Image (cartoon, rainbow, N blue to C red; front, side, top):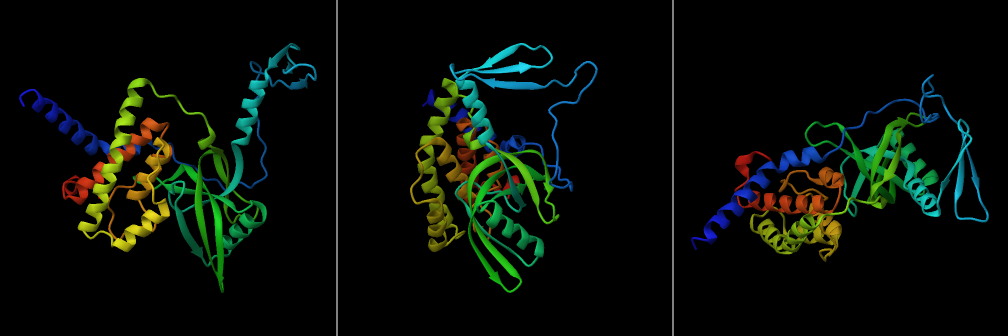
Length: 325
């Protein structure tokens, strides 16, 4: 007992510190907010500005039909440098990750979540028509920073599930799909009805590899999450924060089975503690923007584990004194 007591005290103190710092960690993870502009959709881009010390150079590309390399000629040096097949493949992948889509500033969603939106405004109807006719039913959803209220530079692509018209009112249902980062500033379309943004799909971008210690830590907490979820569900019903029917609907929307991969399990947990539709009384701080901003599985698993710990403490009455809810 004398040998194990210090270990127990150390673990308890560590957990308390992590839980107490969670609001600040969530805020730190978030990227710089967006700056919206009213410029129109017709724009030109330059990679760099010419100057006497840095003149603009032109590059011509010649592809060899007999080798698996591509030669690029710099007009200033007139000397070729080569791109291998793998280089060209990486460039192609980078290009495929970028697209321009209409965006809505509404709420932070996570992949897999669904939400309904509606409006009587003509601009909203123009947005819906553009999504249906020109974007193959795809749009981007961006939320707001939970502390500052500024628009975020991260969001998710959404698929238009259905559209309903009731007189002048238009209602849509969307299903969140892939995470993205906004590149540059969103800008108004030609009719100045809605914003467009150049985005990069981060789900398809390579992530930093975990070292051995990070992997072991993430795996340990990943394995603890199923038991914590069961505890959380029991407390939700015990404290009457949701009815059996409401909890069943939340779980059905997420998928009844807890995912097995670190990434999917972490996103599942964040969607569980920040459910849609929202519960009448919040049971956890807003963690969805921070989950979208996570760099790798280590960040995601730790955020999911800490969010569950925080929410369980709150439901048990231990988190109210922190003022986070």
